Image: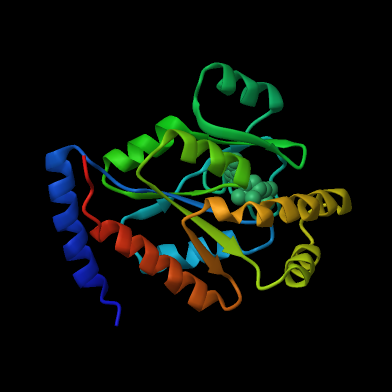
Length: 212
Ligand code: 5GP
C-alpha cells in the first residue's frame, strides 16, 4: 500500500543525493488528445504524490469559466506571446486550435532546481520539441479507451465552440497516430487506475540511477 511518509523519506534521501551531484527534479511530459482527461488525472495525482507540480503554461486562448489566471494558465495576448517567442523564453511552444500555447523555460528550471518533479501537460508538437532537446525526461501518452469515448467527452464538456471541438477532434486523430514516440501509454478508462499507473511510472523514475 502507498505510504506517503515512506515516499517522502525516500524522496528527501534522493534529493540530498541529487543536490550533491547537481542533479534536480525530473521532467515529465504528459500528452494526449484534448478531452482525454489529462487535467483531471494530474489534479488527482498531485493530491497523492508529494514534490511534484504541474507547469503553468502561457496561452492566448480565452479563459474558460472557473479557470484561474497564473494557476491554470498565464493568459496573454497574441502580441505578448510573440514577444516571449522573440525573447527565447519558451522551452517549447505550439499553435493549437488557432491559439498559441507554450512552456516557460524559467518556470520549469526554477522548480526543478528546488528538487520538484515538473509535469508538462502539453500537446504532441510540444512533446516532440522537448524530446529533441532534453535527454533525461519521461514521455507519457494518455489515451482514451476508444475514439467514440473521446468524441463524446469533448462534446459533453461544453466548454469549447463547435469549430474548436471539430479542430480538436481532427488533431486528436493525428496525436493518437504519434503515440509511438512516447515511453509509456496510460489508458484513461478508469480514473483511479490511470492515476495509479502514472504514480508508479513517476516513482520508478525517482528510483532510477541517473548516469552522468
Ligand atoms: P486547452 O485549450 O484544452 O487547455 O489545451 C489545448 C491543448 O494544448 C491540450 O492538449 C493541452 O495539453 C495543450 N497545452 C497546454 N499547455 C501547453 C503548452 O505549454 N505547450 C503545448 N505545446 N501544449 C500545451
